[in-house]
Image (cartoon, rainbow, N blue to C red; front, top):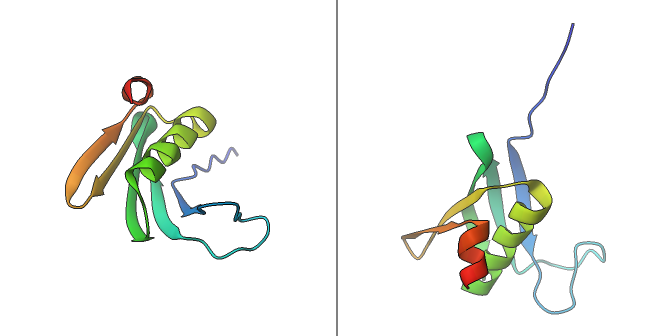
Length: 90
């Protein structure tokens, strides 16, 4: 028998300034990450203070460290899409 388990969801937290998860500091924002097919990642269910710079930083981490090819989200009702190529232009 073979078993394969896909990680399909995660929780992301944003810490501004010097705060961090490792020191058990309160986070400034929290959001749900859903890993869809073909390297597409969807961010949703956000709560707290999330700047556009924070959105870019989250996308960079997901692309660099998690192998995402495309990061999708809505900010103020407007759809946003980040890829390695679009992040290079910013």
